[in-house]
Length: 324
Image (cartoon, rainbow, N blue to C red; front, side, top):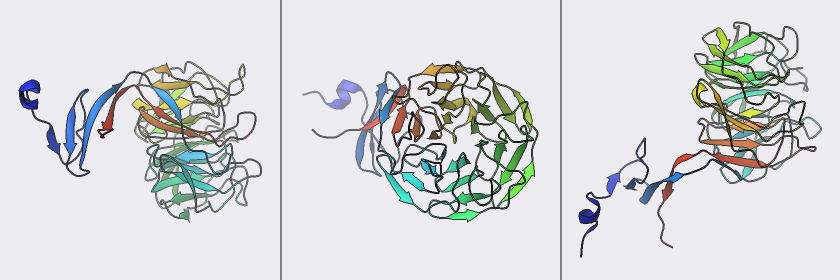
């Protein structure tokens, strides 16, 4: 009888970790996890239902590097909340609450290095921020400006925060771990109620309160025009930990349609429409570091929602081979 080698021309590889990149149809055995795996092709992108938040809410801060390490912070349902929840990939768990109740705070970073600050509610009136290490919150230095409806992006070691609707509404602040705030280059226009992704050297802000399709790229203090959105909107969410050329924007609201399901992907030059969310909403949170895996959660649908949706982009998907 013919062997696998004779039929296929090569053996299944034994690898200590999954290959990167993987090729469609590739089969290997991961000796660390003791699992056989295959790279199959996902023909279309999709949003799938995930576990519901423990507390339905809107106007949240969201951050995290993947759909399995997402964090949802504060917001309102009403009243204003301090609740913090972490997502495992299937369910949300209540963890240490933020030191303040906050509505419309900014958020950026990852599960073990996150930054949340500002907000309309709370004793500090939008002048307080804090770092999250995956377990506890540490207060940072007082923010030089009152911040709510602001946009944040970048790691907490070098984050960018654009001002909200307050004066001066084009102000930009730069944050460094430990609580250092410095003044950055003012934005071309007010960017309140928008979303962001990328880093201080290659960032992007999209979707803002005047509901235009303009997007703005940020490169070490220099602002320039990015590709135009297909649908202008405010109060959407992004995969905030992603690089600029893999940014996503989903949900939000526009004048002609209150809550939206629209999803768009950025390739560094232009925006492309992708598969729509199942639940139209605004004031939601987002997480993710690529345009092939992201999480959308919370928001307002006409009432506050706890709905979570997981995005899987079109392309190659790695699956574990099991006996059945």
